Amino acid sequence: MFSGLRKTYKKFSKDFWLFMLASFIDMLGGSLIFPFFSLYMTRKFNVGMTEVGTMFLVWALTSGVIGNTVGGALADKFGRKTNIIFGLVASALSALLIVVIQNLVLFYVAIAIVGIFQDISGPARQAMIADLVPEELRGDAYGMFRIVFNLSVTIGPAIGGYMATRSFVSLFYADVVISLIAAAFVFVLLPETKPVFAHSEHHKEESFKDTFKGYSQVLKDKLFMGFMVVSMLSVLMYFNMNSSLSVYLVNHRGVTPEQFGYILSLNAGMVVLMQLFFTRITTKWKPMLAIALGNLLYVIGFTMYGFVNTYFLYLLAMVIITIGEMIYAPKEQMLVASFAPEHMRGRYMAIRGFSWIIPAAIGPLGAGLIMDNVDPRILWYVAGFIGMLSTLGFTWLHFKAGKKFEAMSNRNSKNGGLEVGENLPSVDPEKVVLTYD
Image (cartoon, rainbow, N blue to C red; front, side):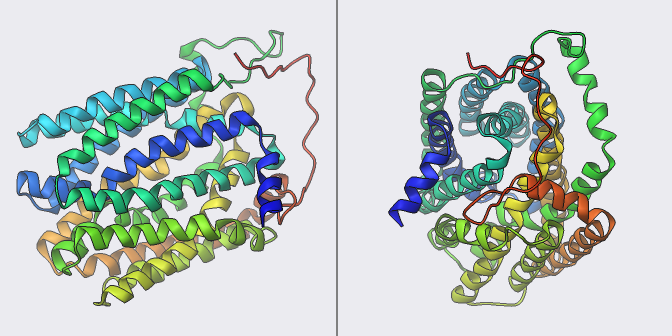
């Protein structure tokens, strides 16, 4: 066991592990708040899930259309490190608005401001992971990032549930402090990782305007955009875990905030302990069929919340969802990273963000209308139906372009269940020089 851990550690550079540590610190703060945010809003303003859905719509539009899109271009133009630090500091300070505002309309304005700053560093984070590792280790790297994320979510919701039963406001102050600590960590210890291209007739420095124009090239990638559309349907189902599940279980099924925190901690703990195992056993699976299978398990788990009524079965539903997640997520992240040319990595990651942003904009509002006006159990049947559509979509993509997806998956596999597939084209060192500031 320990030799395996040492082998995994030695695969990656010191800078990669420092980035993982910085990410853990930041995500621990976010995981204190996010699972309980819907509860916080409904109790503070005495509103229903329709208003919560409107809040998510405002957040998604600002974070996605402005924060994510600008952030992707900034990451490719000015670099990853500066973007990450700015996002951490700005989102931490703007989050204080959420605590002091007592008017619902002004609360929506504050959410818009937070949304812009919160996601402006997202594409830079995803791009930095790809910058820090060779392509044949990228699948491992994104798998490790998932483990670090879920380690934070294992700890965060349990602590957040305990704090929320005593003071919701304390969650926000804790997140501000943690975000500022993470920003200082990145500033002092992490290098800039943006690839630096030598000037030549083949590669000229882009203006910021030209960088934005590069989004049109991403949108013309038909296979990538088809993959994004089907992924949006899956996320539309999955996002209920972040937006509606807490209110449904606490307000309609008698689960306490602490018990709900344990449900999310179960999800994250399973990923921390078992993700590498599932990554290894699914290495040689056809990627689109693996994603379709994982998505089908999502469907089963989320639909269960519509008809089960004991705490044990709520936990069982989360176990099924988590197994699906451990199959689905690494394959999806690995393929997205493989679509992007090196010099457009930030912009591809920004467009990938829309597969979450659009569902976040419309999903919670639709869920709120269902929960506030009809039997709330119907929400989980609707989610299951949408999930089946995405399962069929992933299956269709396999038959449409399965070999292309397999080639992408093989490029990113290596040892320990991750074996090297086809070789990458060689790179002329005179045309591209990767440096760190």
